[in-house]
Image (cartoon, rainbow, N blue to C red; front, side, top):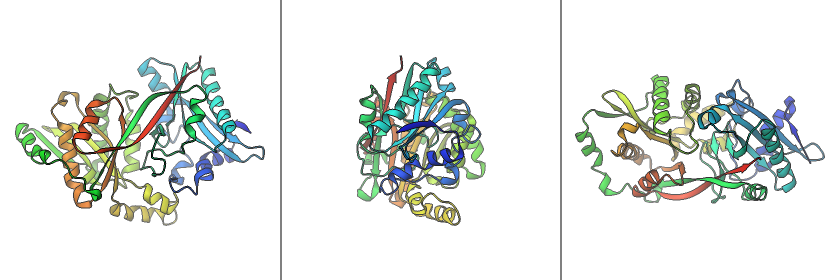
Amino acid sequence: MRVVAVQTKQQMRDFVRVPEMIFGTNPCYVPPIWLDEAHAYTKKANPILNNSDFELFLAQDDAGKPVGRTIAYIDHTFNQYYHSKIGFFGAFECIDDAKAASLLVRAAEEWLLACGMDAIRGPIHPVAENWGFVLESYDTPPVYMSPWNPAYYHPFFTESGYEKVKDLLVYEADMAKGYEIPKRHEAFAARFLARYPGITIRRIDRKHIQEDARAIWEISNTALADNWGYVPVELPVMEDMLKKLKLIVDPDAVWIVENEGKPVGFCLGFPDINILLKKIKGNLLPFGWARLLFGVKKLRDYRLFGLAVDPAWHKRALDALMYIHLYQNLRPKNIRMEANYILEDNLHIKNALERLGMEKIKTYRIYEKGLN
């Protein structure tokens, strides 16, 4: 076994395809969109990596066959914001072999230590934009932009001195299994709008998605500033994310609240296209794009990706107003929705979701280790 830093085109191709090589036959594995993935690990194509130093590591067996991978990176925006020296790892995939995993982990640690970092944290994937290792429910596939991994990943890190730094929770509302919003919330929206006549709530405008991207960006950077691990998002990052979602967005799942015309809150949901990516095996060409485009309308699995309210409107239940609109407009589609990446200590959001009748179904864990 050995680990090499990716330098050649063949090594890059191997790096990109490692997850498929290891888990391609696993029913929980979902391929990425290969057309995007082939170029995603570059500063030019990735707004997050554009402001990071990074190294890609590939584990190979004695025959040169790829058996694992990871990326180590330094997010300068994060460290400037928190006045820290924390490095990250992500895109970790490996066969069930402790030696291969140990070589990858050490390679990432040594690179970050040589760059002057005090600690390493992860997994936080800067390309797939997902956080953590799945800690339970390994037999359920991930929704779009969320992780999946086998159970054997955790000992690779706990036995190398890594400790939990944060758990992220997943809540579910499945209308096909009888989920309904509690009755006491039904008349809430009318009472709220009567109390605050300047408030309006509208769907995202796909014809002016750049303007809505800016509104979501501005609200996020003020509303989420105190959340653990949050870093102010640069506008190109937000625009890039909404650009990815533009073709699959369901206006019934994206709501923007305005007070006298000024955006003060948003909720962002989208259909789980992972179901379609499995069917087309991640290939948009020659006809995968058409199956993706037309198949989106038939999906009943959704993800609630983000919900944020301007701090000036906190404690007025504006988040509940958006959720009620989300529920009322998606109810005719009989959907199942996951609310992902809920911080374990964010009692406000946890309690709100539980009051709305949602159930916790999954946990992701993020690890950290000191390097000194």
